[in-house]
Length: 212
Image (cartoon, rainbow, N blue to C red):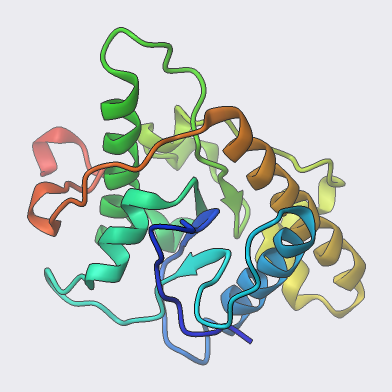
């Protein structure tokens, strides 16, 4: 069960789960996935067991316009790893495009223009099967992971594994592997906290420059 997410700068979340919202009922598979990854990370790391602070961050609010909570912006500036749930709905979301922009700007601020840019603290997860012909440039440039999964993950995505009754063991394996990759990426990148940005500073990275 997802607990109320409070961001504590003393214990920054290991990951920010970015997803395209539908409504509370239809988003239940996302929340189940978040819970599973959090549970695995609590066993894989020494993150404190605090009833008010979660090892991961997920925004369950339904935002409109520039209605971004301070907790969301703070989490984007502090989280160690950014985990987008990629699907067509994600690419169509202005908020998701701006969340990714906020994190990528933070990475760029840390690296600087002359530093190696091949290592990203972004762990993309395919929520539904990809269409390589339709990938936004910002996503195509990211490293992808198969999480040591069978072809089933690539055929149906993580959402498919949550929905097909006989795939429960594969869902458990997938979320464990994602949690492990989050831990490894956090260790290898050591991304420091960044600037807390405002929504007005951000752009939707899924749109071409002329569409902004």
